[in-house]
Length: 31
Length: 173
Image (tube, rainbow over all chains, first blue to last red; front, side, top):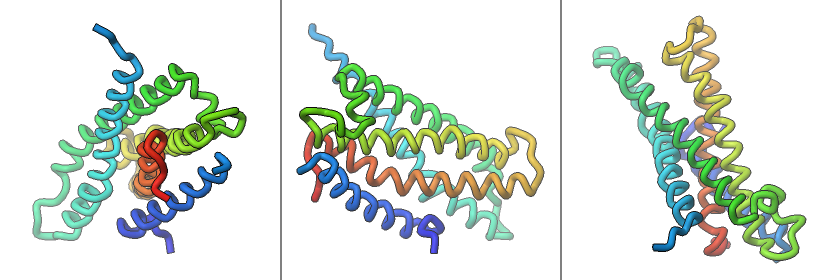
């Protein structure tokens, strides 16, 4: 299912991506 | 009187960014569902007033504030000497790697969003609103492309804002 089809799916996917990127950024910075 | 150019530029960046993302949320959370409800309401007044009088004005402020947001942000990084370091995510930097990686991911997300506004949303919305000629089939395709690009930007705005807010103040996790 495409999360972009609904507003709640879009917002949920946005927060999930943000949390993933939080840890990606820390890994890139080596902290 | 001292003039702090970076503080002034950052202020403009925030004002333009609030305008941009505020209108993005208006399109996604208010206008698109309202137009769908207006179309479904066969006995109602319809959505012609929104598409004729509201949407073109909202789109003008939307795309111009997007451009100002990106330009003031890029200028801020350039004046700080962080433009290259941010866009390379701090991978080639000696120090300040967490700041550069955080602001860099935010800058890349903002850049992708600017591309979506000017290359995908605006040209397709012009067809949908009848500002450029298009067949019904072309309009339907343009409506779908603009919708998905707008929803993508709404999704990306959440991590983008996390990065912008966290570069100086720390990440949430």
